[in-house]
Picture 1 (cartoon, rainbow, N blue to C red):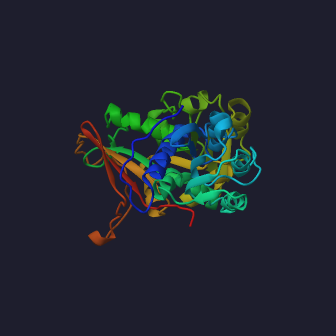
Picture 2: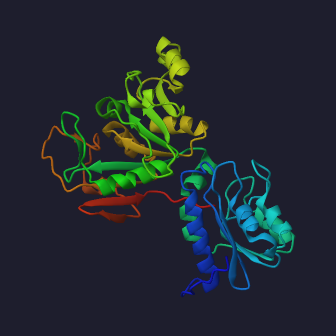
Picture 3: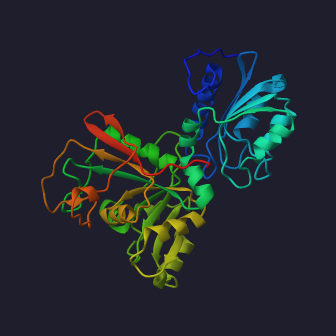
Length: 382
């Protein structure tokens, strides 16, 4: 491979070389988006005598990690080389052997790490294993960027509660649908393409039963080589029928219905389980708390959820403060109808200081639409 790099200025006492090679590892890691959940996104670059001799990234859950791919890519040239890896190499046996052990056996002399791994089975043990073998370890190189890459993993590995990301398309007057339920299309094609990226990125997608009944969505990731998410439907009264796309097109068995426990022994549930491969989550009552929903979803091994609506679910999520981040797509349209459906409601504020304030804002432009991307919480290994 023998790739040369362009050296750029770098601060925080990080060498130009270390920063550039870690940036390359970060770009490699992103190639695993949508395919490694609930594992972290990891990229690795191996350098010797100023040239790249190996690259790798975690490609698929259950398969070899980034370090393994990079070492195999480098072949027999790894002795006395430096490996750059975005996340601390694992030190335990899971679905694959420890990456730290693989690095040691490869004869690598230096390991440069972006983020520490908060997984209790790793959490510093990988670094310790490397150091005990005489390998020089440099930590926290581009830590901020590496931490941001794995916000989903960091939250889920520590709490087993899925990362919740809101997606919502609204008019300039804050509407998500006309009074008759019509909502296609509020946002433009470019904004909708970004939504497909999110559907591929996050492991699950959640909507309320009214969204299903009005729109009959398929809730798939319509993106090249995309991975369809788990389709999570909040349906307390079990109103869903076989006629809807999420039921008819459930050959992958990834449709999940969250409903009241009073429906648990109904004939409808048994038929759906047997004939349609549906999964069910049963909760007490009918006015479910978002926190309870997320906790049960987490038990299914789903590490992240894209919340797409409707109004009631979005309002619950904001009121319970369970949203981690999101993007609100604002179109160039105005409905001007008081009876049209708002994207959020049910709050009474006495003064403007009580308003919900979005943090860590980033503005994205999609031709004549705007995306307001925000993050309430940040998760790192500390």
